[in-house]
Amino acid sequence: MPIKQEGSNVVVKGHIAGSVFPTSEKDTNFPVLVDGSEQPARIEGALYGRALELRGDVLVEGPVVARGDLRIDPRQGRVQLRSGLTINGSLNCHLQADTQPMRAVQKASLIIKGDLVANQNIALKNAVIFGSVRAVNCTLENCVVLGTCIVEERLSVRMSSLGGYASRDVSFEGACMMIHALGESLTQPVMAPYEAADGTIQASDVRYYPAVRKLDQLMNLVDLAQADYPAYSLLSPHTDWLESPVTPNAALDELHAESLDKWVLSIGGRIGDVTVISSSIDAMTAMLKVGFEYEHYHPQRRQQYIERLRGQLTSSEQWVLESVCPA
Image (cartoon, rainbow, N blue to C red; front, side, top):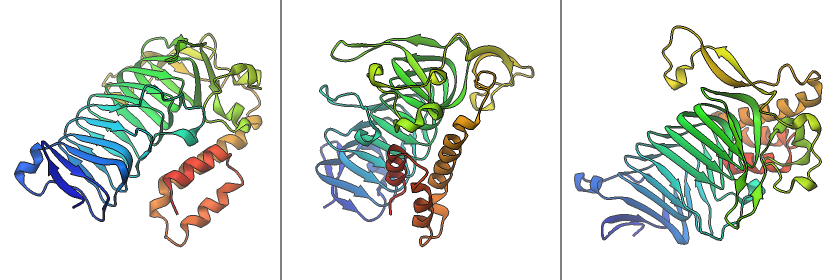
């Protein structure tokens, strides 16, 4: 059977045509293990459990909800969640020790379409998130987040790319990328080097994605000696992050009547000729629009929208869009 109880776990294997929910009151006490380590596991509906573990090759078409914690262990496979994720506890993405840093999005071990919300902490590695992230604390390592990270306390960005952020504290380690020049924090951002598992050190280097998009990299290249980046693509903590009074952010539950002094990422006054990057911004906007609205389109029209974008997208962007919007 695809669903059965093994010890203290409810184990799901193989193909489930519907959703996975507790069928009795006692089932609500058991953690749920979706095991795709031997053969791919696919759930066409939603997934709910007291605590969840996704192991190996796992595909969930519907929403994923965990009353407790969620542990993701792709091993040599890939976990794909196509309708967002809500966790009452924390999320931890476990990777084997010999996993190499993700230099291209095609090597992502975790793909999530939709928003990722956790009431506690999030730790992600080798992940592509086609949506926003919300948590108390969040650590991104070798990740791409095509939305905004809303973090109540500390956001750590390590060798990752993200669309925007709003947090109390933020740090950038190693080679990072800002897909949109949007960010605010109560404290000054920290720029630090990144130390890999093998002991190598990557200096701090934060780039603005539309300015380097022609290189077909959603991730900042690890070997900067081989990267032909234009000078204006560099985001400097001395010129691009400014301390300024801003309107309280409702997403962070800032209920102040007056403005707050924050460190804001802004490149409006530095890049004068926006025509250089306008086409890149337009293409990214069209990609995000189609990706988020894809399920609402008529089934016969969906692939037409994808085809229209092919000529505008880089191969990395096209791979991400086709991964979250399957035919």
